[in-house]
Image (cartoon, rainbow, N blue to C red; front, side):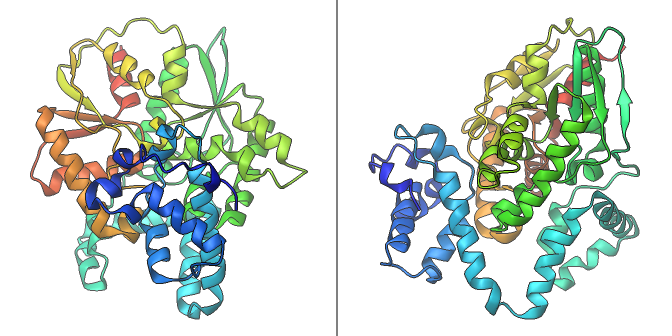
Length: 410
């Protein structure tokens, strides 16, 4: 592995690292983890030593350190490569039931959107029938408390086209996995806002999960399979831009060039695709939208998703969009860009640290006096909403595009 040689141990990454802020321990910060990675790579530390595995798991992969690093250390790719190596070494000795369960949850379930809809329907039945209360008996209390309420309908990709006359261009909407079953209203609002911006929208059936969860879990080969599906779908769509309203997905999609760099048949196609990926806030901020007419009288604070601000370096556009809305009083929260503890499935795999970061975020939100928290990622929305409920606060959580859609409605 290369990359750690660029680290000059300056320590500028430490104040940006959520786990270091919580523990103030060197090995829980990027600089310490880079030293551990170097030790493993040089044979001075065993790949499966418990302390090393723990630190590779405890890292949120939020990219905050990478965003502030003056030496350009590619921390994210180093971490993901190590996780893949750890998983490759651990998989053969994992008991068959555990190996099967992991394959079902990380591969079989996310391979087809239709399978996620079946799982979501089962969860919805459990929530509405009261069976979800039994989750604590099965050791799934944390998962049940985090799970969003599954709505009655989903946003299913079925080769739809939402055309506008005299369109300035065509956008393909990334439907994703969790978003289309848990937050269909965000997709619907996204389509309406893109149409208002003068863009026709296509939603091809032949698309799927972005692969972010697979990459974070040390399963890059499966992530590459998913990437090829999305690249091919975009190529066939005839769209000019690939629009994403989930920051974690957008970050993964923009890195397809790196993910498929070792595949000669897909390298150039993946890089061309990645260059066309845009977060919905980037697109709307760049378009000449008329001023919204409806007021939203609310005190709003913006929770920055890590993979939007750190990985994609998109920070000003969401704020500018919120400031367009009449009536909104936007107030900055302290540590807006510090991870809330969601990080994909981190809040399930590392619940103790996730809860500490969740409480830290909720405290910062409460201090603003905001009535609404605006964000741009489903994982953040779920994590923050659960933390607010646990704290007994009535603060609502909305995707930025939902607030915009409300302000632009006739």
